Amino acid sequence: DATIYRKIGNGPWQAALEGLYAFPYALCPDPEAPGALYAGLGDGTVLRGANVGESWEEVARVAPGLQALAAVSA
Image 1 (tube, rainbow, N blue to C red):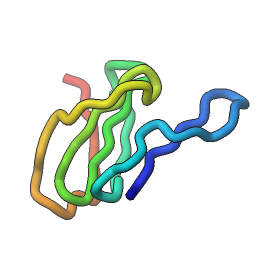
Image 2: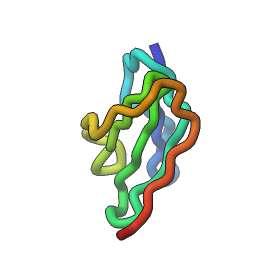
Image 3: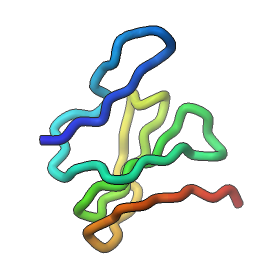
Image 4: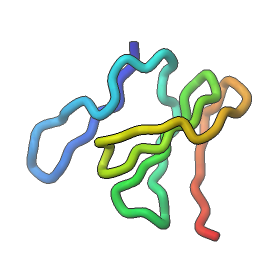
């Protein structure tokens, strides 16, 4: 299983999302929401983390093999 970790300030690294069924290959910040992050998994799942990784939701599915991700402000 794969895990996404986070570090807040000088605190220790901690797991933000554990037990992922696919490896996270791409991460990028949301340009319109401070503290939000998108994670692209190798199976094509795109997750959005809010509150500096406190909560996560699936927001899209794309072709498997995702290796890059970009968030663009409208």
